[in-house]
Length: 254
Length: 296
Image 1 (cartoon, one colour):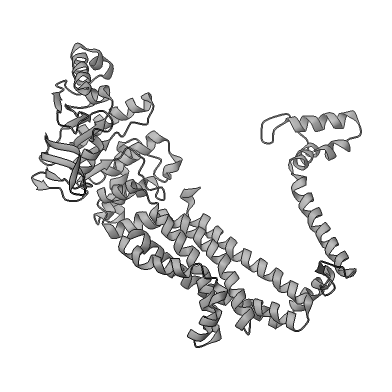
Image 2: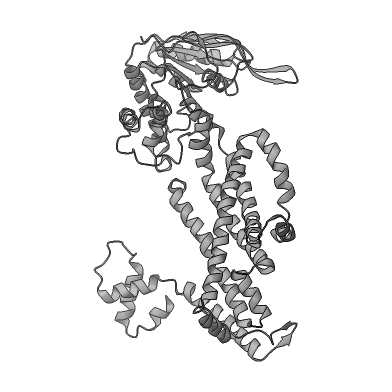
């Protein structure tokens, strides 16, 4: 377990103020993500899971409550909080390597060192040989991988992923899920993974947080104690897996 | 296609032509000899795309020649219009004079200076408006008030506020260029997807770096479109300025030709303006393709 990347959420309310009235999207939730853990957040669409992950990333200010990274309040986006968005957000005018080295260069690392770091993460996500391609020349899955590499190149303490595999076909999704587990194992980064796919959540994570439709008020948390590496087929169809899946489904239905 | 088939007299030729037609270019088909290759090449050329415009222009020139030679006066008055042959002679006489090239030089010089100022100021103002709400509120009213005023309406004001005629012509040309550039830059900057900005922020970029690494690159295609449109209206404005108050320039050349009854030169001037204007707009589109290889 690494010592950095602990996220603590205390009494958090997110939303927008309208003529002094608070229109809450996420209301008074408290959660803890320990350093180096893999947590999935599932919930029906519109329950505020994207809002929550954006707030952890520093893109929304809480109305009340606190979000702490290793004890410090998150006030704005930082390189410690890497985000992989649902949409493609590679810079179209930069090649793969230029995209991946963007973070290191922003931190003031020289071009040569940044290139070296970028190459390492490009290799990690299996995109070696595509360094000089523009994003539009890559398939959707490859773009997602490049985005993961770009986030990792900053060595973030936390990797926030907002339904990153939502738009992919089943086969590509499985491949990327396995890559993600491998990367998590290699980097020890804290991963908070938002998805609407129950099986994906159970297969990938150590902990599943279920958010309910009414502002995450009645959230259920399930621990997934299956050791890694997991076999997707075996695990999901084992007794344990099935029970977890049913529990999650029941929690979602509330 | 029909024309190249009809000249094959014997059946064998016809068959080989059909075979060549069936074989897609580049596909590993039957072994073809040289003649067949030529035939294939000729069949691939879209003759109509050459022939029809050529016929159309020829017909136009013929009509022009006829109307001017017969001095037709029906609604339009062709009696004072030079014939195409006269225009050609005027052109031949003009290109050997230094005056002609001096006028082209002055027009190009004015366009370049005015366009450079227009681009720098236009892009700066457009980015400022797109990136800051306060600056938008400060700048936008001026744009909304001044933009609808045609450049030609600025001529008296320009002469009054600038010390020399030269400066007032450049100023009018600048006004022609700047508004399309401002508006298109602003539009491009406004369209930057929030996700790209958020991604850059999460990668550790500050507001300034977001501006230079995300916002401006995203707007580059729009900026170049604005520049191409700006170039067109800059020529429009330049000509207005040159005709009214110039002493050199291709617009002055054209207007002077009218005053000196050198009617052939009017049309030489007009065609020159057309060519120069499309060259300058075309070079912007060329630059655009060089600048944004990622957008294709």
